[in-house]
Each structure stands twice: as structure tokens, then as C-alpha cells.
Length: 332
Image 1 (spheres, rainbow, N blue to C red):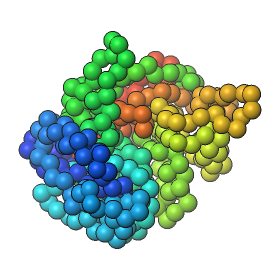
Image 2 (cartoon, rainbow, N blue to C red; image 1 turned 180 degrees about the vertical axis):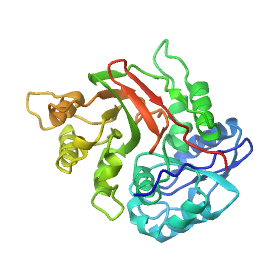
Image 3 (cartoon, rainbow, N blue to C red; image 1 turned 135 degrees about the vertical axis):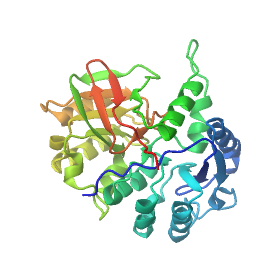
């Protein structure tokens, strides 16, 4: 099992590449990507859009065939001028090129890779093979350019400045972020407090990865804080995947669980009963003394607080807090 590999810290003026390692850029989303690029520039970085973010680049549900997506991503990993890579959106394509990644380039010049959803496969695979502390975070188009700017209900505080500062400090600072600021009310689903390295992402993608040669070794879950979210699936599907993690021993290894905000996860096919996500989670967790913190600000509903893989965090479900105890990056 590789040791934790922290990316090199960014400095003001460093180049960030916005790439398309999963889905294509839809024409109607161009203004959102423009706004996402402006958000990165407001953090003090230069931004370059990759070739595959052009609106005329598409192959089925992906920005390009797997070999071309891998080629562009590997080029960014090898480019010494590029200091971080931000996916513009997710999709259904990442699993097609995991076996084409230049792992030696990652080891030689570790740089932050930011994404979520389908990019969970990329982040988790690189974490498994190289130890890279990839960052489960908002993507450029629908996150930085979308949910960060979405108006909230009356009295809702605008979190854009706070998110911009959090992301910038995470990428440039070598001090732990400490307690993350809750953007919405978090919920204690099972009381308790625990510390351990962060591991997780989109639940279905995590389960998919565990059926491939890029699976996280069982030891990577020992004492870990397992975080996950889900989208566009019924609660029965969530229950199914959590049961798969239980049967594989994951739930007996982790120290705590952090659940994001579900998006379009209905209680379909349940008859007259209407279980909640909390009901499903606690049903699978059973009598394990596992702190569970729910409703935390990450997931497809957005915005996402950044969660770097492998970085030690402390969950206090009773107090409804989550803190990053280590920096995500190191000085070169």
C-alpha cells in the first residue's frame, strides 16, 4: 500500500488547468464554465482550458474516446507549468481510461486534482495506486460556476467568499484547515467522535472501483473516515451498495461515516413506508459503534466543501462538526 502522497502547494499566479476527463461541455453550460474560470482566477490563479472543454468535442456521453481523454490528462500531469487540474464536470466516462493513466507522472510531480461524481473513480484509483491526496471538491462548470452562485432562501448567507477562501487556503497553505464551516444544518445520525484519514466519494463509483484492479486495499479503510454521497438512485440502490461494503468488511474497518446531501434519491418501491436516507444508513450500520454525521455539505446538490483523500480528519457527530487535522498540500 503506497504512502500518502500530498500534492505540491500552489502559489499565487500558478497555472490551473480546467479539463474534461469525463463528460463534454454542453453549449448552454458555457456561461457557467466562464464563471467557474473567473472564480478560480479570483483565488489568484491563472487558468487554461483544455482542448476537450470545447463545445464541439464529444463522443457519445464523453468528451472524447478513452485513449484521447487519457492522453490529455496524462499531458497535464506531465506538464511542469500546470500546478493543479480541475475537472469541469462529471459524467459516465472515467472508468474507461483508468488503465491508461501515467502513474509515474503522478509520483514524479504530484499536483492537486479536484473533482467529484464520476471523478471519484479517478481520485480513488490514483489514491490506491500512488497514494495521491486527490481532492473531492466542486468542479468548474456546475460547482464553481453554478451552485456557488445559486441564490438561497430568504435570509440565506452568501457563501461564495467563504468557499473561495477555503479552497484557496487548502491549495496554497501548509497549515490544517481545521473545522469546516457548515453551510447548512448537519445532523447527528449516530453519536460519537473519531479521527482517521478521509476515504470516499460517490457511493456507486466507490463500489464499482472495488471490483477492478484499481480497488483500494482493505487496509486503506482501517480507522478511516468514510464519506459518501449519492445521486439519481432510489434508496434501495443505496441500501444495496452499503450492504456490499458491509459484506466486504469495510464497515468493520472504518472509524466513522460522513454522509453528504442526497440528490434525487427517492424512496421508490417501498409501498406505504417512506424510509429516509438516515433510516437506510442506520439499518445497514446495525449495532456497530460507528459515529455517523449526516447532511454534510458535499454532493450533487452543491456546493461542496473540499475533502482531500487520505488527509486525517476528526468527526464529532455528537457536536455535528468535521475538521481537517492535516494540510492537503506540501511545499515543493
